[in-house]
Amino acid sequence: MVTKKLKTRELESGYYKCYRQGCNTNVPAKEMHKKNEAMLFKYDVDEKTLADFEAVIRRMMYSYSSESAKESTTLKRQISEITNTIREVKLRYASGKIDEDTFSVVIQEYTNRKNVLLLN
Image (cartoon, rainbow, N blue to C red; front, side):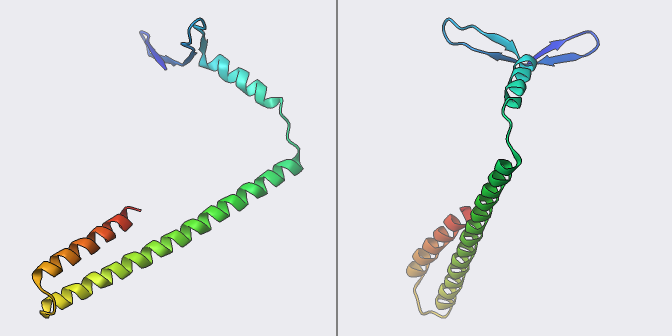
């Protein structure tokens, strides 16, 4: 994008440039967009093909979203389990069943695991 300041306003225009040795092509973006649009209109897709393509895309999106939901559920379950374990370790420490060194190591380990899961 190139901005040219005029007395009344700024004018923006885009260019496609080729810097390959010997090419040195510099084409205005509007011209290139018109050429691309004209090229796309050459391709005509019938309704049946378009419907089939849409069905494939819908299946892919559904599959992707169901996989994401499963992964999300698994992550939530794992985070919940780690949170419960941390709570149990704190209760054991408070009741004197484990010493401070063990408590520190275990809490640090489970906190790190939980943080990793939260980043996913």
